[in-house]
Image (cartoon, rainbow, N blue to C red; front, side):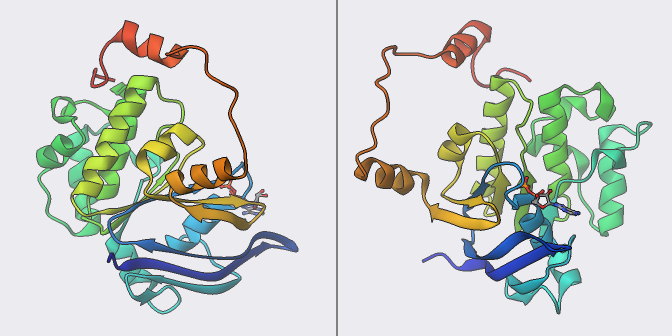
Length: 253
Ligand code: ADP
């Protein structure tokens, strides 16, 4: 049995009189990829940022790796990885120098090239952030979340705006990070991505969790209601055409 690493109990967040998060409860298990899905404005970022200790809650209980959020926010910060704001990527520094800088801030010693290997960016070690492609920028941003060797990382829409190859490369990267034992919490608007990556997903709507299960079970539950998808008449879709024409999955992005 996997251990629970995050517990959220009856979490509420009000902005003035507006209830953005209306008493949600869920657990995240150690070593899983857990997806938070939902329409814009559902309360996903608010929930994540509360767990990340970046935003205050109105009420409820949150525990991360056995640490109570109210009592031990600084200890929690040490064991979680959050993608740094791109504004922190000083334009005059190359990737190696940026990693050295962030490692210093975290008081960590880390070999920048080893970290860049993890995200397949060793050959860009001397490049500046602004010189990277969209996919490479996202990979570097994920690398920035790994500097303090966290037990849990939070990825907020990591593949938004990326082309199909770059998205698939990021999926591989996220799976590799999980394979090292890191728990991953991810938000995405791409349901294909959630289906491929997530062990379990919580679907949030208007501040409430309306479903929580593995993608497979949620699909089975829908099918059991008699739902049937309009039959696909073709054996491929336009994304297959794109991937087929522009190269294989691990093409550089
Ligand atoms: P999501 O990440 O699911 O798109 P958010 O957590 O960003 O949703 O927002 C949930 C709701 O709370 C939205 O209606 C949003 O407008 C509102 N909201 C978010 N942040 C603030 C804030 N700082 N002040 C007031 N309202 C906010």
